[in-house]
Image (cartoon, rainbow, N blue to C red; front, top):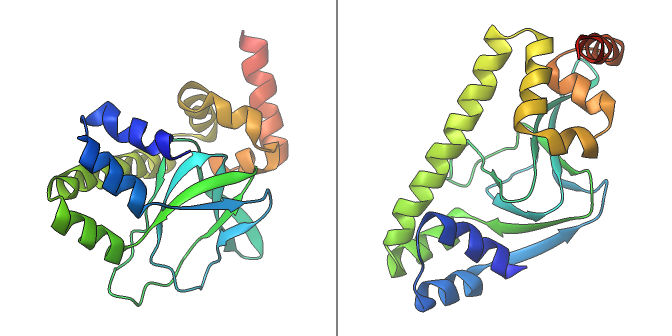
Length: 192
């Protein structure tokens, strides 16, 4: 499993054997069962995660309904946008939709790694920037696109999610009720 994270980093920048070793030594891998919460809204949470295997759904409770805000699959980072001063309270829930393996990290570990290998700070910044861009694109889609277009974007960019997640969660992710998602899918099917 550790090789998956090394492979991820190596795709972006070659690592020396010493860098690979320190990265592996600093990893904490946690296994979660399908249906298990990784983080619960309101809990103190400073951790970031890298999905080695499985699928994590991010959601919020809104007026008693659970609304999906994102899906994270293999080789994706789940990065908290909250402060790292020790007072971060999770505003979302993270639940495993499949048996899942996550690398967990926190600010303290990151600082130690950056001190020993300053190049990892630059790599980390690039990862955070890419994650931020993805979140901005997703947010812009909710402002500018209709649900049908959001579904088409999901089909184009994340087709695996459509096969791995219940339709109810897809519906809340694109901002509609399940019945509306059925109509969108039927309409798209009739067009093809």
